[in-house]
Image (cartoon, rainbow, N blue to C red; front, side, top):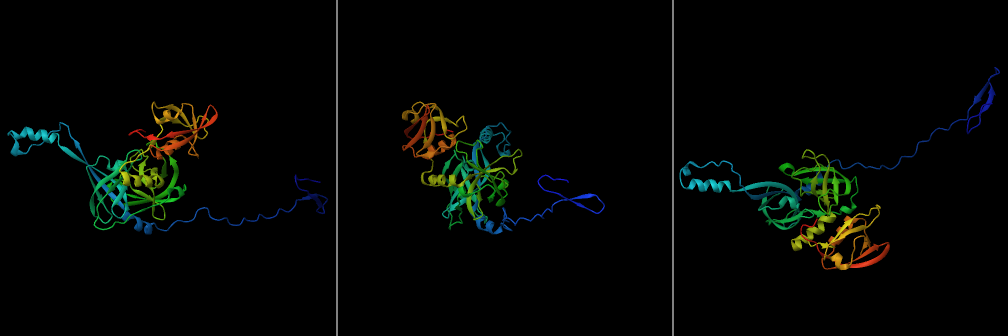
Length: 367
């Protein structure tokens, strides 16, 4: 008698006196019912979306004047050679103001001619020219800019209402969602590329409020200031930066989410600048990798010191909203109106206390 682990075997004669082991019958494997597809096919063509959104995207050319102090040899017109005007001409030409041309992208958000772009596209420009998808051009002027978040608003005066883009909700974007990027790469004119959201909440060291969407749609120099659209044709990001060892796209681009851009644009249109709240403290993430923000230093005579905040305090919440980390607290305070009061939930030596703080004005250039 033979035995198999977990099952019985029966011996039977084959008529020759030998005993054969008969193993139990193994039932056939039944195929599982088909599961619903995790990925559905996308559009066969982006053309309908492109036709809808491209008229809202613009190219931006800027001219910035600089002093040229170089000693480059100046060619003097023959009519001035040997005259008293020759030296004057040489000096004037050596120190002449030369025009430096730059290019970027933007998108119209109001039919009256209001355009959003990056601050680094128009910063320092003395002349801004906007080109539209139909080939027309208009001069533009700066309404307001915010160097901290790299957002700027400019405006043109069109003869007729312009096609304009609408804001989408970037909070609904998921990693893996399709996006369409549009702009002016390398000054080539209106171009579009498609890709997906690769990651959220990227901190690339650009500033204290970094919260970028990482995109794999090809984004190149000249795309700065252009929009990324969701599949409904709504702006969900302001294309701002790339990571590249070559200067061109390697599939790692970054856009500022519309949830950040839209309210800043609204304030720039209303005031021309951004007013941000400030506590006057230095923050770090907790050493135990938990949530909250640790105060490691308090500025002399700053709002935090006046309120009684101390180094070693652990901020757990602001106005009842949980603080995830130091960057989150900085953003929450920055969003508060200077002069308003916020209530901080603090742990001091392990004991919870509530501290009201009157928010100050964030100093210019404070990163």
